[in-house]
Length: 368
Ligand code: SAH
Image 1 (cartoon, rainbow, N blue to C red):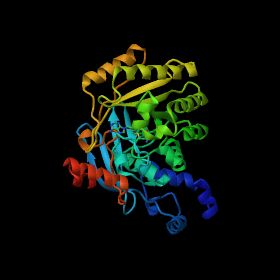
Image 2: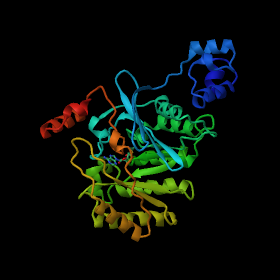
Image 3: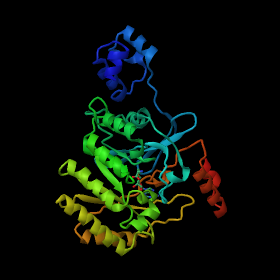
Image 4: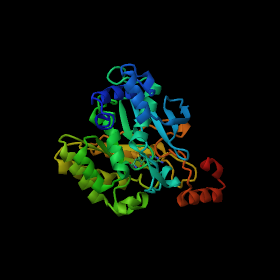
């Protein structure tokens, strides 16, 4: 932005700071309302630039305070963003792509196939929409305290735009969030985890979901390319770059698939290896996510006893493993339920709809 002012407009660099504050702290998008800019500069901006925010196509509050937005990104595509308030904090779950290319078997976003990457503006625009809705004022009236890149898409497959958007989330002229309060979640794109370590200090979350390669490849096909040992090595390197940092491993519990005692014991071993490599107790954090169902899925949520049994085995090994409370499932806003809208129907989506039809499920609903 400084460069734009200096080089394109021939103006002072500090003008960029004023504009950033108008947009991200005061949610003003009309140059004419930016009262500390002279008339001539406002006219120049009018001629050279535009502040375009995502169009809210639909929004829905959940009974538990969760809030979901369906945002139109262009004429054809829409994505979802979810705000999750909790004691003392407000977390926004942000999307990085329209659809997703990875085809994780238990994720609703996968069924729609991949359409395109979101731009930096489209990613930070999600934060803007939520922050404005909440009346968030960075550093003063903090409503939005955390961002997790856990919406639709694989953030590391849209690396440059995601990194740029995350830097606006953390900048004082943007949303002023601390490094550790911005979390990038990945299905395990190993070379990109290393690249992220070179340019960023955000918290890292890794979608593990299985402790052995055979099972993980079934659930997360990307594992074939980057098996668990390589993935764990890259996580060690990421944590080593910033001493004292932990990595969170997400484990979605699916009934009779990865919820058995042997899975828990294998997971314990994997997490212990990680701690040992870093010579740090509790370097590996585990988050347990009970599977959230969606139409046409072949997976199911384990019953509460199975979830508790799995958690207990981790606890007995000395590891805290919180079970993530399902939030916003009455509005289909829970993990793995984000669907959005993609205009170009991909082959994968067509197949999913065919499967639903064969089951007598509501294909029309999934296509809506
Ligand atoms: N592509 C990134 C970002 C998505 S984050 C990643 O894989 O990490 C969304 C998180 O929810 C991931 O951990 C994902 O594996 C998990 N998830 C996906 N589908 C789910 C479902 N149906 N129920 C519970 N968790 C799910």
